[in-house]
Image (tube, rainbow, N blue to C red; front, side):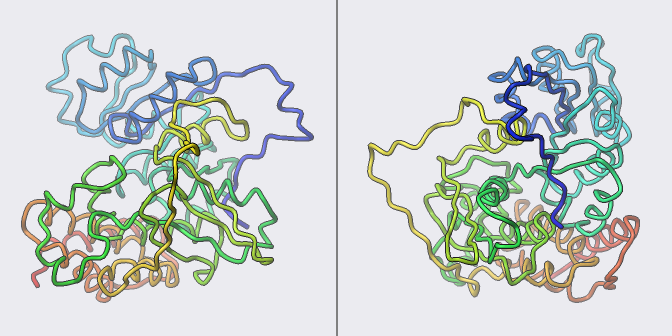
Length: 401
């Protein structure tokens, strides 16, 4: 069984129901996913209202968001921000700090839907708390399933919680899957833009600078995700996420390069039919779909202009030049502690690269070596996953080529 998705349509009855307001919490509201989500909320103000917001250190931006959207709860992950915050900048909102504060926002009884938008493994605890509280979750934090896919799946079976993917690729698969029965799925095909270095050789990649790697040709993302796109580690993580999110065998997952970023992913059924979700690249579309599912409403995302010519290319990935992709398939196959180790090693390696302490081509190298040398556990507890995460981070910090 795939991870639980809320199903609210019964013989079309939902269309006749009065509009109800969904109260949401956004974990990571000052990041790229969070700000895009708030754009959607502005357009759907009659249907979606903000109850809680969290950020790590950007308290000034958070204050502005709190005032605009009338949030009742605020949390700042960095305990040190409490010293800098001006009295009254959050109005009458309840303000808390640290991981406990984030979990408090995610689990509040008045919250109907939690948007998990914190980047990296840091987003896991808030998502986990929301799951335990039985919340519906819009999942943009792929690391939740990369690190703890099997445990998340088990938790979903124990609660009323549900997951709707917000990643553009997984949202596309989710939408395309509704064209047929799950038992009739042959494979899913994740599309990748190829990043700024599509077609480059390994010798060329060895000279890549952080400035060049941050210049993504299609998407406007944060630095960590942009580097992951350049190495194709983001697609490796998405392979792992898809394995758990849709209960797939690794052999049912493929990746193709699609430079135009118009087809966000595809599903092939056993009869050969391929269903694709297409739109101009804009994260507000999958966010809105998650917030309003199973309904669709006019949105603020740009539309396809079919009065203009379009060319859609699909190219096999160069796995020799971009070995990070193979790491995703390896980890999806092995499971256990592998996801926690790969994700932690990659986060530290990306940070070292951005600081000029590691070469671009060394990012997948260190990830592979740390993965090969970790103490593998096929059935870890959540505490064990966090232990392996800490170990992998330390190993990657001290790694030398």
